[in-house]
Length: 377
Image (cartoon, one colour):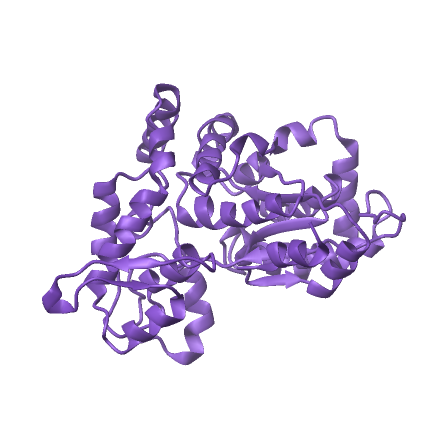
């Protein structure tokens, strides 16, 4: 595969690449990239995690990148996920979560057998280099910077925090260097940690990243967009000075199950959630249905969306680009309910492999255990 094709695959459908210039230099030099994306083990897998993330991972795989998924059990423990019980976190991580990510890749036509999983506990065990690297990163980062980075944990700056929370960002950065990751990947909400990784990269002596000629390099950070949850914004219409702040708070969240689609949701559940979704007629800003259409359905250039409707409402119509569909919606030529019905059909078909995967008795039991944990927490 030529360099330009690899570059296009790595950079497409991203929010940001830090930086495209550095990426091009390394690609031109024939650098073999090692990727990772880390996940807290915190509950059921929704479209934002399972489909958005795995879409990008499939791009990396197609570009010949060595990909891996980091099961961040220590980070989940620090951030009090699943009741802060480490054994539960590990069990769910190597069980339900691992199976869910493999099923998500299968939904996208990828080969789940090529996925590599790394459990944090196993990486850190008897690994003096990890803890030394974490200290070296901390020595090259200020306390103020770490406090500002607490937002990568889904927490606001300030407030009362136990000291362990401050260990989270330097551990996350150390994960990159100890694994030799030159292509760290995350949602845009993890940007601060990856910026720290780039800032300290050339200062490290213990485990720096190196190119093929032995020169220190900065990791190329790739951020995919966050998709919106299906709920209505708390303020509508949204004031222009609050757009950035509210966008982050409106991202899809498993803590609001009626505003997200889980990868193993039944067709009935998918239909119910989409039917109740916020989708005001003619409004294209902060419209989660349009956001999903853009990010999930029209991700590929040769995508299309069939709108089925009675003749009295214009009859069936197929859109072959997101821009064409958005224009029709803005001009009120496409009704929200017709759009919702089309999205329901697409999602049901897309997630069929995941539903079938979780119908297997052993895998279904993992999901049932997680449901019970969520209920009893």
